[in-house]
Image 1 (cartoon, rainbow, N blue to C red):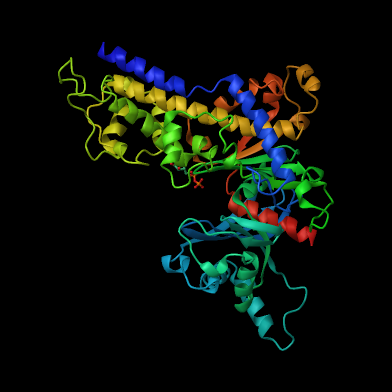
Image 2 (image 1 turned 90 degrees about the vertical axis):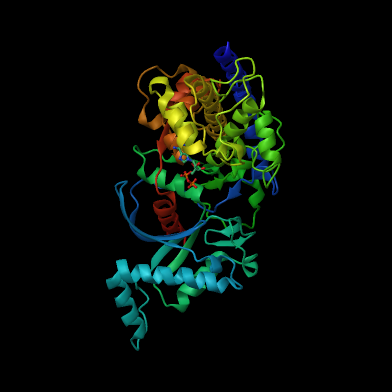
Length: 509
Ligand code: ADP
């Protein structure tokens, strides 16, 4: 009776996370509507930011480029040799950003530090080139015009208003940075000024968003000759960048500084804010309270149901709802009075399970993928990491059931975004053609390539298979269309991806 009551309660909670085929289809419809809205006007729910990058690579690109990445805690500098056969070599250095520079009085203090790191990197890894440059600068004739200058892609993961491939002004700092004087300034120009002060042979050629980097990296390294359509991140947060027809980006207007040669432009969707109004997204009591008690209620609602930053917290809230329900014997002490199931509990009073953000999303992967006898791995993790001693096999089974439901819902929601991009860009062709495609191997020309990155898609068990299951439930894609969608991991978006954008920027000059 005890174990049956627990199993029934866990089933009930797991069912709250069901996201049906009908839900998926309604989601796709609304997603496409919001994509279109974002392309036509500023200030839409989904920002659909034009990146000024007008082509994806095909793997034949060659050359030596630099990339830097200012994300949160670290500053990464790298050089990337593109070999022109879909492969590359990467050299990189990483340095923690001193706390005092994150809140410096002037932008110059921070950007001078960044330029200094670039100088150190050049001295260490490209010493010959660097020394030759210094000598030439010192000569009475000055540097020759044909001197090789490194083009650099600048990955800057803060909100910017981009107005050209290497122009963008900071809207606001996030993640603990706060330098008032940077707001409204062009961050590429700030970096270039400090690079020039040191006389480095480096040109800041492109401002890069990490999602766009993922798309570019995947397109360069992906097998086959068709370019990649979409780059998507399912990590701490979620976002996607995709190739759009330039005519559809109507908000750009006539006067925009755009290269028209390909008729396309990569769009950074900022899809984490899809359906902030909750017209189609699921909203369990756990989603609801997570949002209400977050520091940005009502914002990034799609992301709050999908990404690594939030899934652990959803599970924690669902589990605590059972713990707090006295009629459900989750984590209860088996030796306590049978008639009073909650006379004692096995959860420590200072268990992380009792604290907001106390449960890490990696736990969902551990328990969903647990095939050990009696779910021993789950029980050990509960004991070691979460202060829950002597969890029973039934407890662990209840935890696993709910965790799996949350993970599966996240994957099915991810499928909504992927499907919406595939359908709205018309990449599968006429629905009639899809239905009549023969059942044999997919022809390379018919592949629609999608690059993904992030711990969730990389480590959550069967994440891709759950995405695919949902894709097949969408009539515009179906079983035939789903087979043509190739999903592959894209690594190092902020390195090789940024280098590729710098290369594209050079070509457009
Ligand atoms: P980022 O998106 O910041 O570049 P990641 O892709 O590594 O970095 O994502 C980090 C997020 O993934 C964190 O929220 C973390 O909780 C979550 N995470 C880490 N390991 C796993 C795992 N094995 N399974 C699922 N999520 C994980």
